[in-house]
Length: 148
Image (cartoon, rainbow, N blue to C red; front, side, top):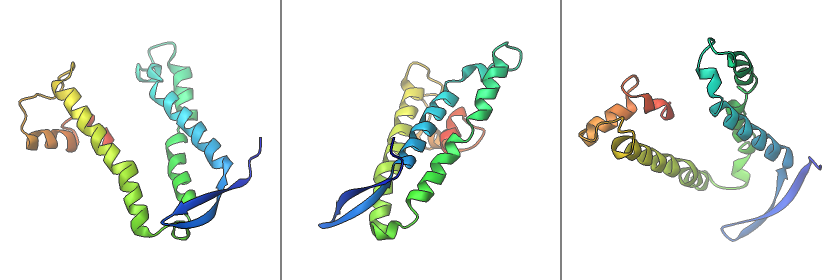
């Protein structure tokens, strides 16, 4: 498998430019994504040391802790010279489209799910202000982890 950079032609605002794509970054993203899935599905770890499967689950949890920081490192590596590819305003608009909008949309879905869904963890009688406080303030709601 070839791990070196490959050139891709990118068009941006009518300008055409060859952009080098490092395939090892893609491999790291795939491995990190699989590690994050394993971390999130490793329920035996959260059952505690009283269970016989806890020790291997704790080992898996420990060995895969690199996954989330890897995404931050990959972001830094791929953004190193972003101004050669796009303006800061173009980059900011792209980030909002790719991260902020989906984040807000999924949080709205989660709020609806936990308010009027099958779990009804958050009381549907809460006002918008109370719901916002319950979702944002630490210690008020178990669903604030996505904010931090």
